Amino acid sequence: MAIPPSQPLPTLLILAHKCDLIKTSSLSADTSALAVTRVQTILERELERRKLSQSGGMGVEALGDENNNEKSNMGGLDCRGPGGTFKFENWEGGEVVFLGTSVQSSRSDGKSVKGSIAPLMDWIEENM
Image 1 (tube, helix red, strand yellow):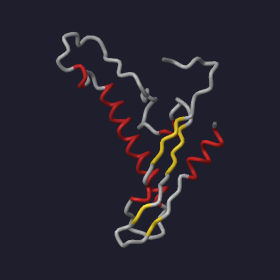
Image 2 (cartoon, helix red, strand yellow; image 1 turned 180 degrees about the horizontal axis):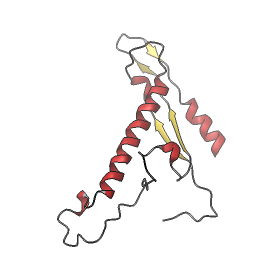
Image 3 (cartoon, helix red, strand yellow; image 1 turned 90 degrees about the horizontal axis):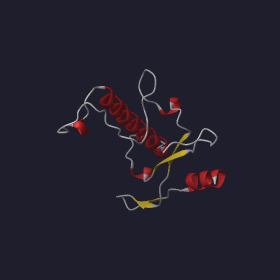
Image 4 (cartoon, helix red, strand yellow; image 1 turned 120 degrees about the vertical axis):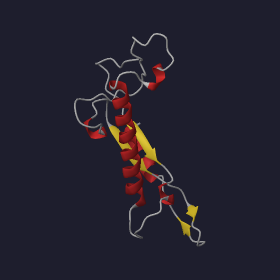
C-alpha cells in the first residue's frame, strides 16, 4: 500500500526500551544514548544486509521455487537507496525518531535504579 503524494509521510518511532539494563564501562555513561545508538546501528546493518540480498540475484525466499525468473517482492521497508550503506538519516521514507526509555529496576547490589518513560510521553504529547 502506497501513501498518496498529497499525504505527509508518517513519523516512525523506534523505542529502545529497558536501556537501564545495558552494562557500561563508565558510571557516568548515558545508557539511553548508548541504547539508541546500538539499536540504530543494528537496524541499519540488518537493512543493509536485506538490500544486498535483494540486489544479489536469487534470494533465499526463492530457493525451491519453480518459477525463479520472477523477482520476489518482499514488501515492507524499501531500503534500496542510491549508493553507500543504508542510514536512517538519508532515508526518504519519512522521519525516524529513536528514543531510549526504561522503568525502575533493581541492580544486583540491592540498590534501585530509577528510569523514565518521560521521553516517550513527551514525544506522544508533541506529535499526537
